[in-house]
Length: 220
Image 1 (tube, rainbow, N blue to C red):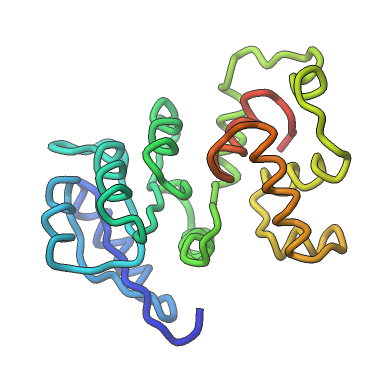
Image 2: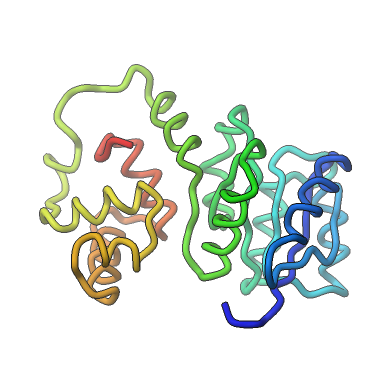
């Protein structure tokens, strides 16, 4: 990401949590918290006068919650990236947050290393999904999990390579990591990813992950 200092705004209704996250983030190289808000309404007021690269967005907040705030920000400021700060109990909101335009989720209980990985991954234009969160979603989507034939074998024809790429995407790997793993070029991986998105009819990579999990196409 070069020497550019990336600007971040924290949005969470718990002041003590914001202070802790701010301290952790400001220890990271070339990343700086420039402001914070306790709800979506305050965030929108801040964005009228202040620029940012990424917003760390809580989901459940008063006034304007994370879902609505994300929807407004992605429409009004399409270059701003949004990373959701999530708790396990937020699961009912995951699809709403994805549809609103969030690029990833990280658990509030995550350590500094995972938080930094999530932030840098999204600043690089890719999606991020906490592996703990993925496992939790798998355990709870369509309980009990069906053991019958996966839907993609009946309705969608994937190549063997596309299935491999899909599995690695759902493990949270970047395009370059998948390319190294499969001895492919990054451009080829991007092509397989585009084919997967096209065949499943989803909008982006994070929707692809949720589709794969919901239809039991992968095991994490």
